[in-house]
Image (tube, rainbow, N blue to C red; front, side):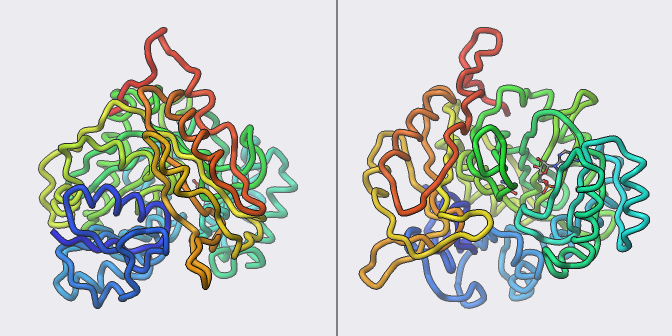
Length: 421
Ligand code: AMP
Ligand code: GLY
């Protein structure tokens, strides 16, 4: 099978790496660190299966255009991608499907939004309606900061058109979990749960980012939790989408908060998480053919649930100077080969370019994802950081506490390498 992966980041590198176990893979546009990268637009690539990585092309209808040409595509059309493209629409679908989520309201005017804020207890959450690359969310204890943020977002100062509607919601507390499901329009099967780290600095401080690291499996994501998320969130959502005429074939990514009242959906994304993909996909069992699985989903004929290796995976994101506010680009990256030569380690290239001499240089905010495997989260984490120590460029930064608590945890005194699925 020939598979065309659309996108250029670490998630697409991980997709290509795992797909290449069983398929011929090209990545468009990819980047100089991803083997098989081609500059041909997806519409001009001949492939048996297209896998669209990022949300932006999904929201603007690339899957529809490819399907209109008769291609087999894994990724929702623009109708389903609205789940991520509009948080207000997503909340409407959640309410119709009776999926547990935070109390919320969607507003185009400041006054009613501020009135609604006043009816909530802190912490307050203010979100831009449209795509904001994981950076359009404010969580704050301060009512006046929340009200100021509503004004700034509605004025469109921060995110342009993405800010013209705001969603205001109650702040939930609990551990966060990412559960990604493969959907074929009617059925869904879960991937192994993962946890990511959204804040830029250690101890979950600093601004939100797209994600600074991730690990899988997650001990608290027991079979019961996964089952509850599937039956209370993912399946009713797919059902509601079908009721609205949406044939959703792709990943439904539930961003969850495990609250004292049970799991609640914070957000849906319509793609694999990044960096969650970099730990979840490599954990697929050796006999699980990812190309077959995604082709089955794309053709509406999912037949099997994927199996995962018991080994844990941890990924640490290496970011460029100034990320997330103003990432600097063009710095020469040293040590990728040495890092990749460490045992049980793989380096996925995200915001990577090449200079005139062919050297890898930084070309975005999140530059590399260093993933390592081990019998436990703790062991995988140690390997990942050993490999990180081999890499450097001017202004490189990363978190040093990715999977730290999970790596130490030994619930029930047993090993923490338990598979969550
Ligand atoms: P989102 O893009 O909606 O996932 O939000 C990004 C991050 O903001 C989440 O991963 C949470 O850490 C935080 N967040 C979003 N919604 C809430 C909420 N209702 N309560 C508490 N934290 C939230
Ligand atoms: N890691 C969070 C996301 O992909 O949205």
